[in-house]
Image (cartoon, rainbow over the protein chains, first blue to last red):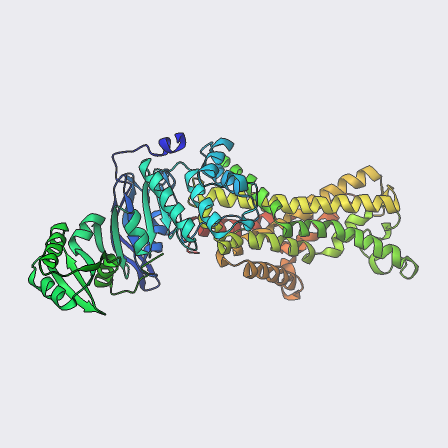
Length: 319
Length: 277
């Protein structure tokens, strides 16, 4: 806890302010005029299909790739002027955490702590190993770790730096359902401690569950940036209704202004409402028409629909 | 800069020692003089001085004093033996991390790229010096055990006391290390530029072979003293009476002249390049 409390120290400057970022490989623009603003305390989802420019953007944010144009300020400091100083409070990994397989997990963390010049000793390494539940396996070579353990060690390698900003690229890659749940809980804990998190992913469900703000990128361009709540409100909420009487239910749906975009399939109705009031009106209307409700459930792919609309790209819906 | 380079250096050494394949180079360095000694002992009935290995500088000392073993094998190894070990480690030291993805892991921490590269270069130097030291100790020990700790006849026909010969052997190895390190510098450069271990290792070996080829070209005979490949025999000067010193001084500056450009090139590329793997 003490470690995280120190990590969570805030400044007034935005953790990330990227403006008009451009990166071309040969003549192809991988990133084309990207603007990003990550605020302190955000769990910021960076969504996009494979090849959209997420990883290249993250590489630029972490100083691994030089932008062809544009600027990046991290906690107010321009990374082009002094990347080491600007990225002092930042940790993260790209694509997946890559560590030395022939060293133990503990040695990997000690190496990275030394490279941080943080003076963190064995205690800090023990603390983060404990946090990611790897303390008992810390002495084993990384080559003997499972994929999930490597992901957790990757998170530990970030935490040992005591970051204020975490940049994680596809942290759920190759992780089993239990690992996913653990990862979500850990990110929640880190966020609660005040660490700002930028989470890049192509998994909409993952982003929907943990992120407070989101940016969507397609073909190297940001097509949406804003709060997750605003996005949900803007797009409305879709529900699936399985009534006892299809025709009468369809008539009720059609008669209510609060219910729109009604679609029928296999004896079920799919529709959109803007808020709970619309849903209450529908239930009342069905009761009045003496239509029973076998099932009324929210559709999980509302964000996916938005994504399709904004990017015209196929994406994965579930982890 | 220095403190950061030393941090990187310390951990580069740990990484080198943690990989079994790097111990193979050290083991090979230890085995070469031992294998040579065994072959001499086995063939002593069929091969006699001044034939075969006895027909090399200081070769007539074989079987007369154990101190000759290191020096004769050093001459016979020529350029290729140490180049092979240098290429294997130098070619992989950056490219291996590039291909394994660990380069991006360490380059997002707080050491500057120049410090990371300096640590790698120092670790490479240490490894090659250690390999030569292991070679020298293994050769001296087995040689002395087999043939005794006796005076050595130098290239001018003078007798050198065993202790004097031992000191000159250490100096000879130090001198021999310089062109080896120059070739390793080129390997490091290729490791940075190619981002591929096999390409960098093969390129380093080809470089050494090309230098040897240049050394055989009579059209450029006037340049031969200034070719890197010719510095591998500069240590012969130490075993002349009187010691001329010309070849020794030339070995120093020629080796530095061949080492610096690839080192600076590696630094210039490494400091600015995109890490995309």
